[in-house]
Image 1 (tube, rainbow, N blue to C red):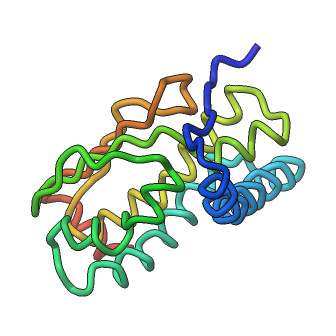
Image 2 (cartoon, rainbow, N blue to C red):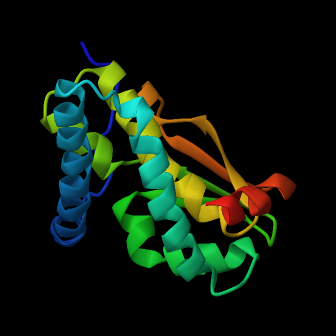
Length: 176
């Protein structure tokens, strides 16, 4: 039996509907990752050998646009974690400074998609780790790194995502 708990806390039917439509789009993106992974593995290419690099590259492209040339993490908060994102992921901004952005996510549409597809906890955890490479790429464009203290995919109550300044991130981002 799955130890992953990932149920919405939205009670208002209108909110559930409105934010549910956005969640469906994110679930669809998660389905793409899962199906691509399955097909690649059928051809002898394990997900760990390609998916993280590709998704990180995509994150770097997105992060460059989101940064608007700034290294201030508050710009990331403003441009990526606005009202709708906070509702869709049921997130709480814990801390927001130029060098640190701490967010707790209490719902994950990507994990929900993988649950609906019938994946076991181990596969969901692997897919989640690959998907988080996008966030690693995004924050690298701000001169930071991602610390995951815990995730829903591991069976925790929430994802504790911590973006922190990292002197090596900028060099790595430039190598992308």
